Image 1 (cartoon, rainbow, N blue to C red):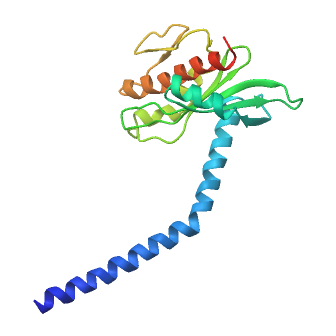
Image 2 (spheres, helix red, strand yellow):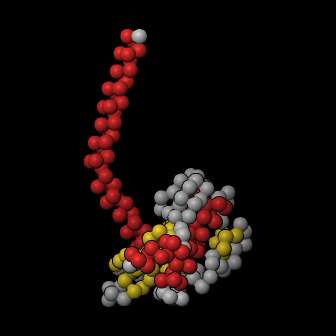
Image 3 (tube, rainbow, N blue to C red):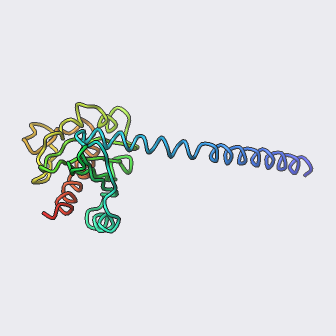
Length: 192
């Protein structure tokens, strides 16, 4: 009985020290983690709407309506040029892929053309769904018209389709559903 009690107390002390160390590490690093996330978000916006020199959040009330109507869209930004003219919009969506939610950032210019797509945080399978981060996949969205939905083809894609990643059709379809939700939200934002 005494050995069990002694072992239990030792384990309790080890767990308390480990929990304290984790809490302190979290406290020390949380601001830096938030800063790094903001940098990644800013880089993604600039990559998908390269003509914009600055971005502002869309009005909160309008974003709330868009989130409700066009799930999985979660964030909307307005892109401006140096003369403070609107040059396009950036949408962040969170469709569900093979491994869970996939962060999809989509840029659409004022002419109604998809200017880019990037995949952010995800849990897709390395070597399969994670290949959506490669230029060979995400560049397929560049120049697609926002007049209608983009399709996913396993082979022989048309002008309105993208070629699915071999072995990762679910991931490809999820990402494209995020882009299509962004296209729908775009039409709402511009009043079309």
